[in-house]
Length: 455
Image (cartoon, rainbow, N blue to C red):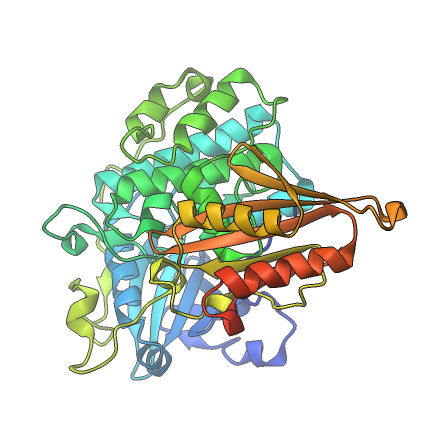
């Protein structure tokens, strides 16, 4: 498995365009090299001219955040960071503004993303991994105590400084108490697919603390193994894996590590271990020294020209008559008449694996598949919720036995994905089988093919 950085930031410091602010003065700060660049601004290295203290300044283009409709995201990030003063959370010092830009003056962390650390050096041993995880839990649980829920915890948003200490960053998707609805839950589906908790995908409301715990568990898994616990290039299948929570935990991990991962990556948020439970876990408590939050809360200066940091619900910021915005999580959960094929690569039925969508119930799908393959002369074996269909080639025995595994995944109550995987045998007969099932079961046939993989 390969870890993929989905941070969305270009770190190329050699781009000539990145030099546009270099040497520029911003009050008491002198701006230097570009540390990162995203869709709506840049992050620049800066130093205080009087003290030589280093900082990272996030430069945000006001017009771009209005065009991208993410004004609330920036407000939320500022509001959250204003509250937080902890050794394992990146600090916000002040927010400055001009007519066209917002400048967030942040703590400069000399180190690297945890993502880069794992990619370059591979998995960590349990002692080193546990230390990082302890600091991550300290930082996240402190955020929760302040009423801040990150909602986008992933390797790319965890920095590790040169001393090996964790600092959590990027609170743009964070939630605060004002966003909770009357049911006491959050309802905005957001996060990064490989790290998102199953209850968020379910789109029925979720607890911010509980979902953050899940994301911390994914991070711990990657730290100790070097790869993701849930991964698939097909989003629908990835979400199904997350729903099931059927994670394969390596046997070479210690019993304590296996146990805490299993308790965190529990797909049921009601029985999932809590932050308090993690801190009482024997594996976690080894050589654990809790971090001390900063006793004194520094005032964070917010320039009036930046914007008010009062938090509002997303629904209150839509213009009258504007369409409701949805994301991939919500779209996957919608009814099956939508064409999901745009999420996935489309290839020909002649390959080893295909997937297609159907709005028949799981029971009907299984019965119809059994009837179809039996009519075509296949034998059917059932095992672990899967169908294995087998056909002997009596005419050309050299081609051997055709064997196909059929599995049905539930994406929502009205949407299922059928996956066919050819293990061996005659490709032409396999193609006939696939086309027959596609025509009979998919909805609608012209958009039925969801994904396939080459031999």
